[in-house]
View 1: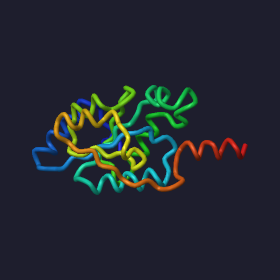
View 2: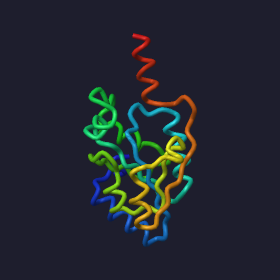
View 3: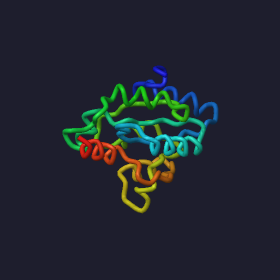
View 4: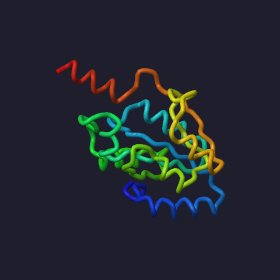
Length: 158
């Protein structure tokens, strides 16, 4: 599991090797705070799109920028370990920027996967992916599954 969690430069080298073997590279990104069934289904569907699935994980500082000072609930090292433990995930790489665009530009995955809730919306990754000739694809989301909803339910039950 730990060998799946890699630094950005290491990941770039691993992806070069995968490309030499003709493998199709898929990436997705997110906070993955309080992993739930919806995340697992999302990642499994993303993995079906190619040979290698990379999860670009928002660092704690990045999650705070996006979700506020109370998040994440689970620290990045633990979130990375849980993701790395999933069979669908080949590599996990943490990034600290607000978006993964810079890292996506360096990795140039064949497919960048986003949740279906982003379909039809302008997403920051689109311009980056189009610049190198990759594709953005959308996967379905499990209705009612979200970390935010779980957190709110816990708050209500206290």
